[in-house]
Amino acid sequence: MSIFKGSGVALVTPFKDGRIDYDALERLIEWHIQSGTDAIISCGTTGEASTLSSVEKLSLVEFTVAKAAGRVPVIAGAGSNDTAASMYLAKEFQYAGADGLLVVTPYYNKATQQGLIRHYNMIADYTDLPIILYSVKSRTGVNILPETVKELSKHPNICAIKEASGDISQICQIAALTSGDDFDIYSGNDDQTIPIMSIGGIGCISTAANVIPADYHQMTTDFLKGRCKAALKLQLKMIPLIQALFSEVNPIPVKAALNMMGYIEKEYRLPMCEPENATLYLLYDTLSKYGVPIK
Image (tube, rainbow, N blue to C red):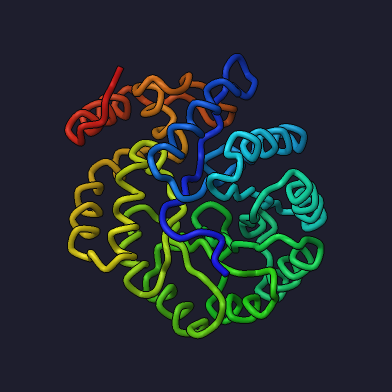
């Protein structure tokens, strides 16, 4: 059974004076639910999980689960380059009430494919929660090969993959190898949501959905309901905005955009820092042209 279908937002983590801004986070959660967002992903790449302590991660997930109050699934990022650390987070997030886990490939270590299989199976054995694999070689230096995905899909707790390799041919091969299995594919690249859904994907885990949640929900819903031309029209409309939101490393531009919209402070955790002025001008211009309200 799928954790969710449609648009999942890889939610930013708002900060104020160096700490998590829970007031801003509550506003974001409520806005997303009212806008139709189908799932909230906490402690992901866009949420700056790599600079959050374990205590902060647990607090963040507990808060998100409480405020979502069962209205949408909450998926917690339990990725680490240390298998034992991921196992610990997986268990803690299960106790916190998360509906699923997103587990990125171990970064820096550059594990072999056999190492990936053992890493993910160890985590999956340690939790009852469904796990979404997360393949994003551009951030971690490690790619999950299609044959590895097929092997991992045999575990009853590994139910899906967030595919952000950018390699459509690879994603097609994953779809072919897991066809007929109880295994889902989510787009991890905002500009490839509809292409990936066209080969069997059931939705996305999106950065850009932080800024235009209603449109992301509408686009994925349109496609799932067979309104493919309407979904494609929205996907193509989004391309300039998506390009602006990735004009610097994620989540620098998306947090600046949310600041322009009045939702959060423009604050980051080092080594993330404020965007260049050129990026701010591009964001302001692109948001205005798209019709996003700016305060």
